[in-house]
Amino acid sequence: NAGVMQNPRHLVRRRGQEARLRCSPMKGHSHVYWYRQLPEEGLKFMVYLQKENIIDESGMPKERFSAEFPKEGPSILRIQQVVRGDSAAYFCASSPLQGAFYEQYFGPGTRLTVT
Amino acid sequence: DQQVKQNSPSLSVQEGRISILNCDYTNSMFDYFLWYKKYPAEGPTFLISISSIKDKNEDGRFTVFLNKSAKHLSLHIVPSQPGDSAVYFCAASFSGGGADGLTFGKGTHLIIQP
Image 1: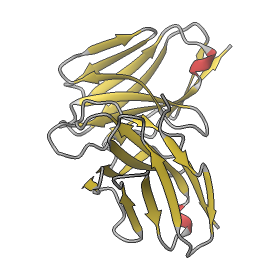
Image 2: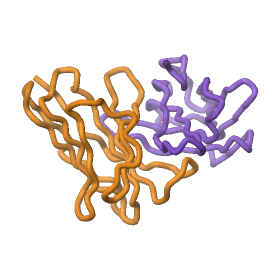
Image 3: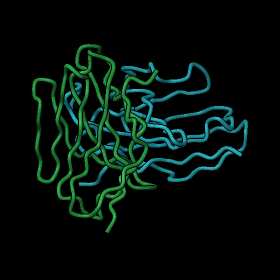
Image 4: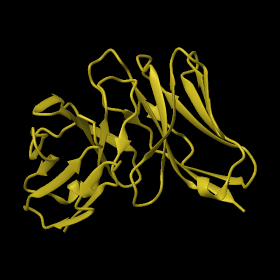
């Protein structure tokens, strides 16, 4: 049973370009979460999605960031017009059921570098 | 505002001894707590969790203790092994708010000395 898949593992973008990060949840999981980890920090929750629905985006910056989880295909985290401060590791997690009492399983992350 | 705090950025323990990692939280609404282990360039791996209705949960070499009145939890690893060297994150969530994102501490880097 494959784990959570993320690609690309490393992404380099120049300031002003767009970054697209992909996440395929574990088989049988329909709940996806995105987190961001800045250097020397813990992971910060960004957004929680189910298929075709954004459930909670309270951790997403108000501008330039968007996320989707279509009926078919991976979840996408999109960052428009990237700035140096967007450089971070972005982790996706999935869980089989909704609720606080279920573990979230993490992918290996995408390391975004903005030059 | 750090709602989950891990005050020790690093901890060094001799192989075979007990490792104790600590975590404090400020939000009394949290009712589920998890520990994750993370190696460099990998995603966090779930280790063990505890619900607020319990004060202890054990899984092999790993035991988590929860002191609700002190808003404190700890992870005990015994005996410590070289493969335990990693960054350990404490995380918390609550069931009533509708938001299911985990709130993480900044992590403690555990180093197991041979």
